[in-house]
Length: 402
Ligand SMILES: Cc1cc2nc3c(=O)[nH]c(=O)nc-3n(C[C@H](O)[C@H](O)[C@H](O)COP(=O)(O)OP(=O)(O)OC[C@H]3O[C@@H](n4cnc5c(N)ncnc54)[C@H](O)[C@@H]3O)c2cc1C
Picture 1: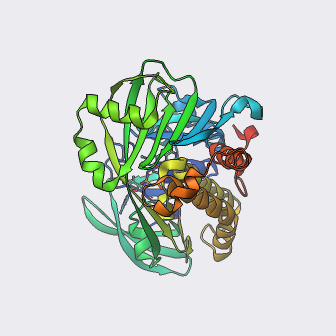
Picture 2 (picture 1 turned 90 degrees about the horizontal axis):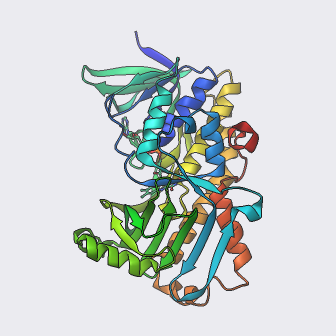
Picture 3 (picture 1 turned 30 degrees about the vertical axis):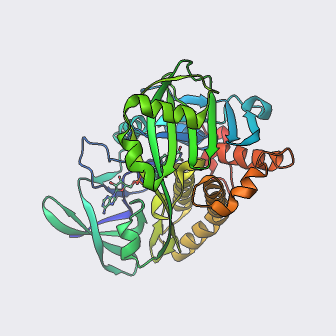
């Protein structure tokens, strides 16, 4: 007999795992298919530093995930944004907004362990791992057929709602015949843990240069999480630099605001592309997170946005008799429209303004991105991004949910 679930999530990464936890809380019968084996975290839980917006921290606390973090997260109390060759700058202080912090910095690996610990407590979740989604099968009127493969071969599972949380190169998206628009920023981001002479004081820095952004996030372990963007053609040479030359390069790109950089951990490199699905829903199916939209990490919005996708879906499913009805999916797409459009615009706008592939924008940038007249607009854009309260906010993101 074919196994059957109300909701089948393909992908147990950041968004899929969060959705599974949110749905279990509402008593929904969920299956989750993940390619990584039990006992090993999916590779996306690596050393990247994730900046969680306040809305995300509220929701992950309400879901019991933040409490499982074994390493301390780093509060972002201030944000400092500047541009090479531009004397203006924007400084934001959470205290001016009546808050202790705008968000928290968490290392992806630590987050993966916390999610895994919380997933282990769920009573209704069925996990298929290691198993891969391989295609769609004939469904019935009230369910989709899904083919998965594991060590024992291929089999079919029926689901009233199929959720694609399988990342940028989503196989589910492709099987559903949903096209995606792609843009290659021709940029590579390097991520590393960096130690400075001075420990972080809660300030997150973003420095825009002609060759890409350099950001420092205050981690909870007295190190900075560094992100350094370079033109794709230079990435090979930057990867080859010895520690001293690498430290010199990032010191030059960033300047001295945070003091001298004295040591760096291993560097990981991420080629940056934007992939945006032309639709996020299909018959008894929905795309979430990176499968729906993979955006430039510069604005630190990808997971924050994907979590709001997941929580909105969980809210709607919790109240519905049929989790995959056309009416529910239409309501989902409608509720996500504004947040998705605004966040895509914000991230893409920041990326284009700061990346090396936009020589035409150079005069505009040098004309003073941070001139006094622009500052209020830049400030409100940054605060919106840092806090994550955009559009029709899911209830779990609100202050009183945690
Ligand atoms: C350098 C960098 C820094 C970032 N910083 C931030 C930040 O500060 N803040 C923020 O909000 N976001 C940030 N992001 C973005 C964030 O990492 C993504 O938004 C997030 O990973 C998306 O989660 P997801 O679950 O949709 O996809 P993923 O995390 O990619 O998970 C997809 C999962 O699906 C599984 N899978 C794939 N195919 C199959 C299959 N066929 N069968 C079964 N399983 C499958 C994979 O194994 C994986 O576990 C950053 C990204 C990068 C690259």
